[in-house]
Image 1: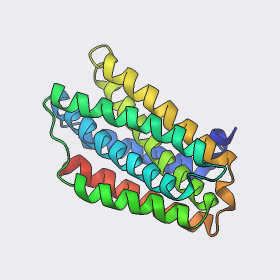
Image 2: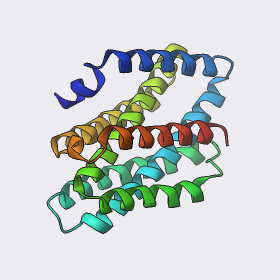
Image 3: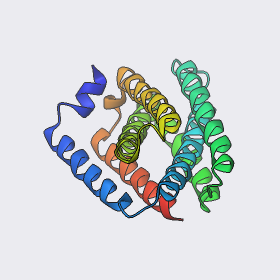
Image 4: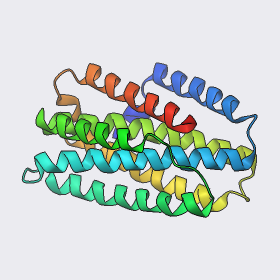
Length: 205
């Protein structure tokens, strides 16, 4: 229900997603399969490292609250995601982003900072981050399907599983009062912009 509210009810947001998907597809059109997979692995590894640090920062502040167990559960899934990409990068001889040290610090500060503002703001952070990641996974899934779904079936299986788990985290955030965070819309917009900027940079650097 909450996922539909975020992805389905806002017509303007749907249009933005469609426009972004067209841009993403266009940006990948001149790439070889190897270059596309390398970029996917690089940016997804960076994103999962960031998610790992966000939940670490949140749990450091909210461990002994009502949302502590939920954050721990989501963090455990992010650890699995990160470990998977840490395995896939050397297997495919892909290059991780050079900015991992920056993302480590920035993500931890985002997680801890949102938690210091209260559990509702921590959940609002989760919703904003996971919505952005869910969109990004969908873009990548479309790109690989357009290229060769059979050739990329193993990676597609991983991306679909992780996307679904990220969207479940979004649902959890919505179910635990994310929209009650002070200045929810403004905070969400800032976090999404930061995530999309990090994605763009990590794809290229």
